[in-house]
Image (cartoon, rainbow, N blue to C red; front, side, top):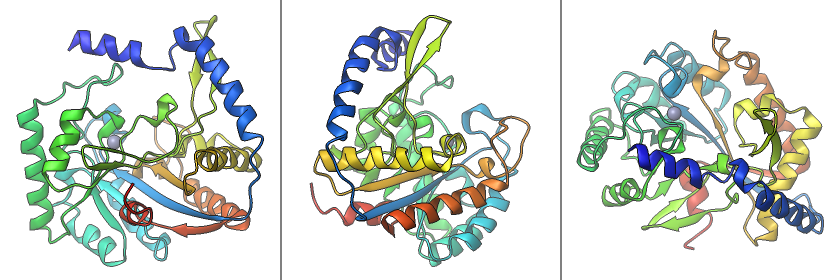
Length: 313
Ligand SMILES: [Zn+2]
């Protein structure tokens, strides 16, 4: 486990040892993106929410914000099909709200059973369950969905976006079709791919890094993932440039443009841990969606609709 964590730290391409490669790649990509012209084209947009313990792995297994978020977001997203990746052990507790969301056209996917890791990453503190136990957790979660009279989930997002090939294989054996756990924060390309019959649809990320100085001298690559924290950290103009870069990159790679946004219930309520979290984030998200609608023809999709609208790879 310790060795695997060290290997995952070395593999992490944000690492200062990769600075020369990252810098050269970023310059080249920037140059290539500058040759792409954007038109007011159609963009598929998937809003996704990881319904989990407050603060995810950083929390203490409370869920104060889940109920108010499910109620409030159901009102706001009446006409916007979205995806809720829910912890398996929340399904029974929130079954009424989840059934209502599904009836309103939203998709309910799975976010692990109790926010355990599905792969080893250097920054994840919890122990990964054995392969057999992960299989058991999947079966348990599927039973919870069935008991709550929810459709069998076909989409999955691993907590902390940590997933290994064994977990992908287990998902495939249990009828899942989509995974959305690719490590966007390491600067992967914002495109879909296929592994073991599972379609990988990553949370969007700008593949152009920013270089932040760590320990006063080490330039560390930081990739802005399309999530709530980064949405709060950008003004409107920065946000539009950011989205343009993602779309240009997809066009450069001959992909149909799409965006996947990620947020968590606890990010929509003021709390003691993260100062960007606020009830104002509902309005911020709405405003940014309006900005995108002025620029592009936005089609809202659940993660499965995003998958099927692309056809077989
Ligand atoms: Zn999570």
